[in-house]
Amino acid sequence: MLQHPHHAKVTPKFCKQFGNVGDVINKALSEYKQEVETQSFPGPRHTPYKITPTDVDGFATALQKMGLNEAADAAAAAAENSEKDERPSENS
Image (cartoon, rainbow, N blue to C red; front, side, top):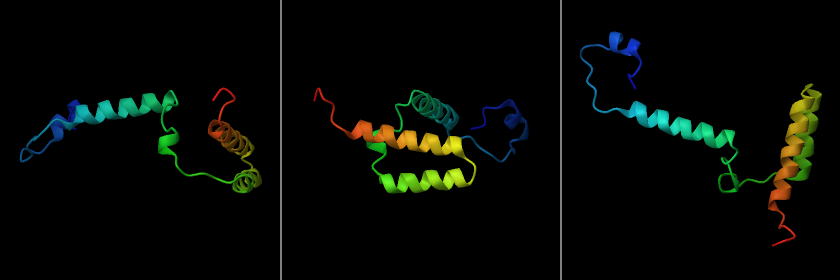
């Protein structure tokens, strides 16, 4: 984790490097970022919790009361898309 040149200057002499975990962390974070950006994560396997339509409406109403209309619309759209994903397709 001491990859930045600044860290080499300020690392106390009594420290010892036992491994190079920075590369592993950077690779994992890059993969996470890519999957979130491409919307492959989180998927159904990672989102086992369901919200009822009543709770979605209550949440959207609370957001609207706070003046967060765009967030309320996005929440309602996400819930609607989630429901569509759960329904079997006509070709199934």
